[in-house]
Image (cartoon, rainbow, N blue to C red; front, side):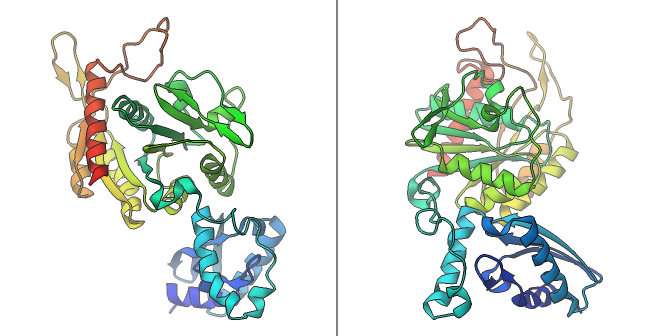
Length: 375
């Protein structure tokens, strides 16, 4: 009978090409799924091991090892390890090196060993930065709108705030905040653009004419790490990450890179949207991340000036999701857009003014977030 344990045990025969230690010992075999006589799995690799030639040889070795336990079909996915995973892997590797393990001693030099592989200062649990990832199960629920306005609300409440637009395929934060300038490079660091008191970095700053991004998973993770390593964030109280919808590579990288990150899940009141959003919440819980609450967006449409409400997308989805994830429903926002005008000096398409009804609601959301992060 093929089991996850027998699959991992078989991979003691296969070494990570750069580290010269087997995948099973290093804990670099992930996402093992078994169906009848077929197995799919993910191998986490050093950046130097990601060449096509190396991956082809590695796949052959994995297939040969699993054939010995009668696995007939193997689907192998490769992912470049995050900075946090590098640090953990080197810690595991150290005893083998100290005990004179010949295979470890003969390993090729690890690029960046030392300064390049320790946890980046901003990512260190003692940095004092509160990381909050804003997630959703599907697109179109207003997750980026919530992220942008929460970041601005925290800044209005006197907090030092950074914002990473980590939806690398669907970046929208610069446009939503009305940012037209690009980041400056000062020395070997990038200075983020500051708008409404929020320091912002986005893939949108580095793409010409709204060109599409055609990248595979490892490249996405590398760009995200660059946003942490190469941007001069200065002193921050909060760093918000606008995640892509769903549970793909970027969301997984964030969960592994930031074990101390907290999470807010955004949904609409529609039952199906809440059902899909529960997957994003389940991913956070499975990786031991604290969900500090649910935000229900597009909860209703309010007629002016009567104040009558139409519940266009139904009712109850946010509360149902919060109950499912054993957390709180932090806010419910109406369907609408800011009453901003392009002639205003601080114009942006998506940021609500502090004295508007919705702007005040975002201030209350900011206060709730600060309170939960202080516990």
